[in-house]
Length: 370
Image 1: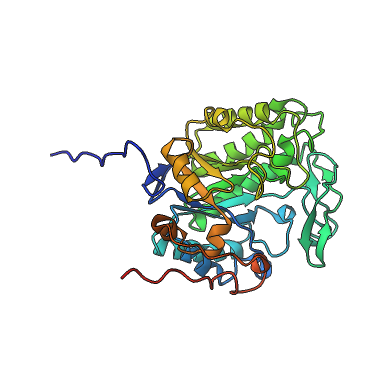
Image 2: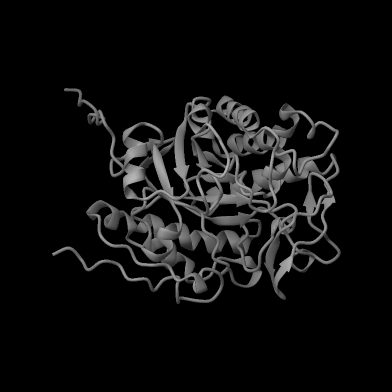
């Protein structure tokens, strides 16, 4: 006799399972990517990284910290890569531990573009960007907190190489045991720099019109999806965040077209930062419902959500899942705490970046259930 599938709740909860592309998630709570600047020699994930991510494996999905696709992609000290054999092996220890504890994890693939400093790049190199416009922002380099360096514009003949770096990084991610990838198209890094007209002044096939400015995003995601499957591919966007000196003259039209192009690729999810990253959700007017209407895959909402807001977003169909950032730093058992409406640990900002176990793997979980 045929077995009927489990009924889908008429009104979904934050704590219900959900399928996102190829991934069956145990709940709709996502750990957002969080830069921690603890990579070791060779930009290999530190030995503590497996424990850190394993502690948080009860999340429906973990999105790893942003991870460089190549040597020119780095913009901060001690952030991991995924372009060498040693880096892939380091990440394998992480994914094995998350899977051992029953979790799911994807890697966020990253190219910082102009948000970098020459001391972080190979000798003789400078940051690359769509246009030679220096960002009014700073970064963490070996010498401390410094202004970013003057970038150079990528030649049109160099752009296929960037696309290839993302494709190869996606293949490396699967080899490292990740369940998929998230392409970082947000927060003023390279892909976002191509998207927005405040940073993209090109007059070739990658600049000017919205169609041209969304081209690099489309080409990168298309290459990744071809390599590992669209059902294991997602994208992060931040339409109106001003971080890293970003702005655009018409973000609604730009990002609606960007999402339309992503929808045509049939990818698993879009992950959207609402408002200013880590800041106010209403810094600029933007219609997120209209944006979501352009995409048929799973929708992950992000930025400033608490338990009640996240529950409402899922219940009302405004999101399929909700990503939490800093709360996951201080609460390895965040899913349980949200389910039980238990108090949250307070994150120690002094230990966000760099260091060892303190502020990384030593936050306490709730006592075991009786």
